[in-house]
Length: 70
Length: 407
Image (cartoon, rainbow over all chains, first blue to last red; front, side, top):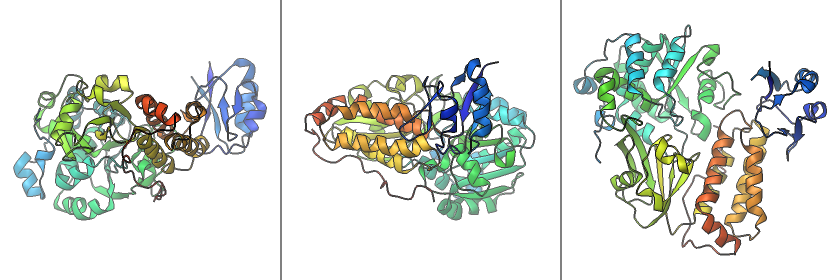
C-alpha cells in the first residue's frame, strides 16, 4: 500500500526534524518549512524511505506529521 | 435578460408576510427534500459550488448530524448574503429547517454578522415555531470566517479560523459530529425548490447552471447592486443590469478576491458559468463581479487585493504566514514600478512555495488571484518594467491590510 506524508500546517513550526530524517524527500523552503522535492502537497513515500518517515512522524516535536494511504 | 426575482422577490419582513407570499413551510419528508435537491442540480452558493444534493445525502447518512446556515460572507466584494438575510430572513430560516429535516438533524445553528442577528434574524426566529431549535452564532468580519472549518470552530465557541483537513466537516465537524455547513443563499434556494419542485428550479438558467443566482456587482458601473440573474447569464448582461460600465473597462474580477480577472475584450461573450469562465481560471464562486476601469492600473489593483489577502491569513500555517506577505510585497514592488524583471520570476517562484501548503484554500486562492493579475495585465507589467504606468488614477479601494484579521 502506498503512503503519503501529510503535514498539518497549523501545527508545523519548522523545527526541521523531518528535514534531517528525509532529505531525499524533503527540503527546506525559504522559511525552513518542509517542502516536497517532487512539488506534491503530500509527497508519496517510497518504500526505501518508509522507516525514516515513520520515525519522522513519531519524532516531530509538533506532532504535525502523519502517514496516510494514497 | 431579466430573470425572475425568486430570492430578491421573496422579501418579507414578518412571518405573516412571508407565509402570505409563499405559503407555510412544506410538509414533505426528508427523503423528498433530498430527492428534490438532487434533481434540481442546485450547487452551493458560498463559493465552492459543490452539489447540494450530494452534500445533503452525505450528511444524512451520518448519525446525529449538525446543520449550520452560513451567512458570514467575509468576502469584501460580496454583499448578497447580507441583502438576503436582511430582506428575506424567513426564506433562509425555512431552508435551514428543511436542510435539518433532510439530513435528520435536531441541532441547527445560524452563523451570521451580529448586527443582522440582532435586527433581523433573532426577531424572525422569535416569530417562528420551528421543529428544530436554532442557535445563533455571531460571525466576525474576517475574510476566512466563512470557511467551513472556521465556521465549525466558531460554532464550538472557538476562534473562527480554519483547521487542518481531512477530515472535512461533513465527515467530522461540530463536536465531532457530521456537519452540514450550507451558505444562506443555498438554503433560500432549497426553501423554494422544496415548495415548487426541481423542474421549476431548473426552468430558469441553463442545463449546466440551472436556477437563478445572486451577484454583487460593483466597481466601475453606474448602479452597483446585488442582482439576481439566471444561471449562465452573460457577464456583459450582468454589468448592464448594474447600470453598465461608467467608462471603458480593463477587466472584470469574477468570483471574489480568490477569483480571477476576465479581460475586457472577453466580457461581451463570456457567460457567468463554470465552463465559460474556466479559460480564465475563474468561476462564478459567490457571485462577485467587480468592474475595473481601463484607466485604472490592473497591476496595482491586483497588488492591493494581494496585500489585503496577505493581511487576512489566520497566522496558523508557516508557508501562508510567510509566503503571502512575501508574494504581496513582490507584487507591490512591481506595481510601484521598480524595474527589475527578476520580480516577475520571484512572484512565480514564491507562488509555487505557497500553493497547496496550508490547512485551507487561502494560499491557493491568493496565488490564483496573483497569477491571474500577471497574466491579464501582462502589457501593464511590461510598462512597469520599463518604468511607466499607463493608469490615470488609482485602482480599487480595498479594505486596509492593517485591519484586524481575526476578530
